[in-house]
Image 1 (cartoon, rainbow, N blue to C red):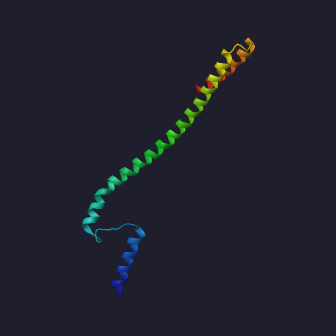
Image 2 (cartoon, rainbow, N blue to C red):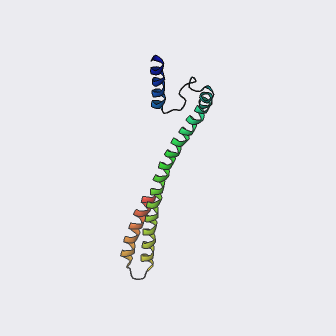
Image 3 (cartoon, rainbow, N blue to C red):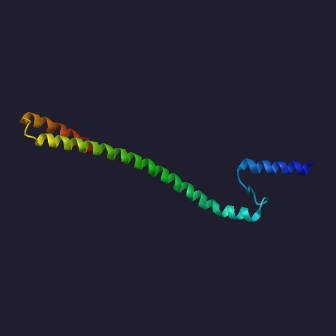
Length: 107
C-alpha cells in the first residue's frame, strides 16, 4: 500500500512539474542530457526576450517614420502650392511659416 502511495505521489509530482524527467531517479541518462541543456535553454530565453524588446523598439521607429512620411507629404503639397502662380507673396509667406513648423516636427 505504501509503495502504491509513493508511486502515485511521484506520478503527481511529475505531472505537476510538466517535466518528463524531474529527477535523476526518473531516468538518469535523460536527466543528465536535460541538465546539460539547461544553460542553452536559459540563453535562448534571454535571446527571445531581447528579440521581443527589439520588436517593440522597431514598432516605435516605424510609427516615427510614418509620421515623418506624412510631414514630408504635406511639405511636398506646400511646395507645389507655393510654386503655382496663383498665390500672393503673403500667401507664400504663410505657406513658408507652415513649412517651417513642419520641419521643426521632424527635427
